[in-house]
Amino acid sequence: MNAAELTIIKETPAESVYILVLWPMVQDLMEYTWFRKECILYNAFEDQEYHDSAYFVPIQRMLEVQVGDMTNHIKDDEPQR
Image 1 (cartoon, rainbow, N blue to C red):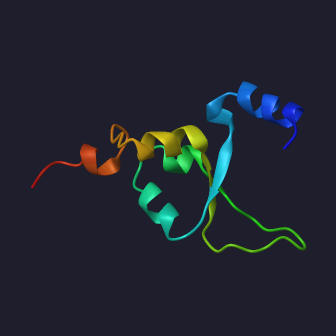
Image 2: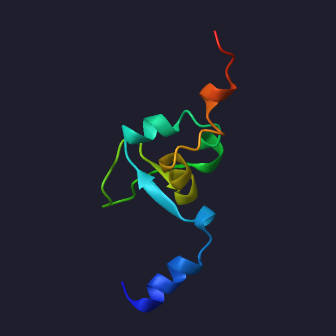
Image 3: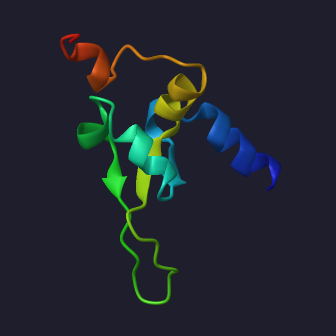
């Protein structure tokens, strides 16, 4: 990458940058309350490589998951048995 490309990436708000997450890793993310609203199903066009059940996920959410932020996790909202 050149300096101009890196500058654009650095200045772009983290919530608008997405990363492609493949199956089966994306399966764990589906348990979060934000998943259906914020993630985008990957669709291959023409000569692009096809990935079954892959989603574009906001990189900000991936960072939250990496540090163990469980505040928007469905299981936390369920009553304990």
